[in-house]
Image (spheres, helix red, strand yellow):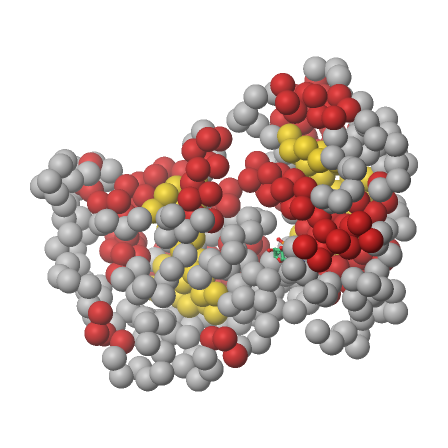
Length: 450
Ligand code: AMP
């Protein structure tokens, strides 16, 4: 990939030019990375020197390696047996993912990593914190639980990373993060990475960072390149019907569906099961074992659809998510950017469909304003937008429960209208909605992420 002419001279064009030890480069090679992404090119040379950093780049463009590689490089020759680096992440899934990534990148080094997060036993994590691992990736709540038990010693800590930095410094996490920071050495390297970084977060972050270098790749308000966005106006009561209709398109092979609440996620998953759509669900009220199972099932392709709350909106890296569907429109535009960033990762392409009820138009409009684009609206051909709301005699959950033998099913639709797209020309199976994806370019020829 050619170097961006606007990049500063400190950017390294290739992994060979980067100040990385051969054992670390071996890990990079084994992951199949041939060249660094822009955020990696522009942060790693400074990060390995110990400089504080604020790094912003679109979702799916390699931020995790941008901080893990310098951590490995800086700690390579250090005496082992103490926590030397701490990465804070907002969700358990992200902690696990970053730890697994660390294991791969660092597999030829003697450095050890551990993930510390809630919902599982404390014992193994305690051993890691007592000296079993040099690099800890943690969610704040569980880490504080350990810290309050007195055996955590961060006296030797050299590097702190706030992954999804804006989330870590928002009102939800800030109190815990402040408590953790107050117990870390003042002299340390601090790095903050995210795809979205509101100015107020940058201001706040300056309290924790010393003379940080700010690296911004692309527009911070932009969704990942490679995502095509489509708004599908629909009455609120027909959202599930419309989703099921969309899913008759087999090119929607790996679909992440976001709902506003855990309750709505559960309800939608039940409704999809009734409609014989293979779906699993992930949200914060599920047990850790259920969360792992759902995500693994989706990652491995065992489940075609993952219904999720915004717990899965950030950072989760699932190869080949073909579509993100916003079943509910998020009220925060940044959340939209993170959600749709689950597709079109690592130079791939993806579609983001948003089911927009009339009462969500304002939120959707604010997303458009933030992105600086007008998102195309479309109607799904043949879909009956005039269907009445389901009867309210049974509960919202009960009405879809079927009660064995399909007796309670209300699926009045006929067979999937597979021939509706005929005549759209050249795009069989893709972009069922009329007026959807621009029909000119085939997907694979469109612009890459990096
Ligand atoms: P991240 O933004 O860190 O979640 O990374 C998004 C995806 O890009 C992950 O699947 C990474 O494995 C992949 N990735 C990261 N760096 C590179 C690279 N230099 N070359 C190719 N893929 C990469």
